[in-house]
View 1 (spheres, rainbow, N blue to C red):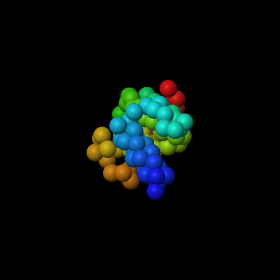
View 2 (cartoon, helix red, strand yellow):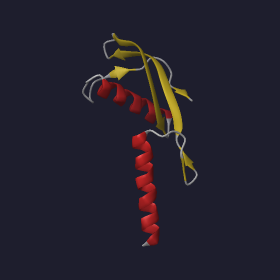
View 3 (tube, rainbow, N blue to C red):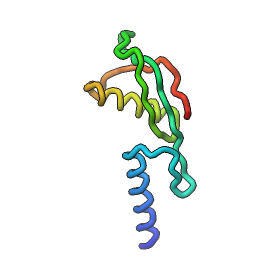
View 4 (cartoon, rainbow, N blue to C red):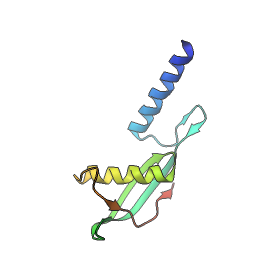
Length: 94
């Protein structure tokens, strides 16, 4: 019973850290990396929709960071989640 409670609290804390976008917080030895994208955003047709866009996120992997950054761009610019965009510049670990 106590173990389940501890695991539940850890999961809730992790969700809280993710939603508040707190960077490099440790959770039982677990640390998420901080990533930053700075550059243009292109549509699927190769048209530059935004010449310079800056975004930061925390994620386990670079691939997940790219997914988070694309999702955030779509939300901020009123696009559907299914819209196709590309990030031509590299995502850097901060």
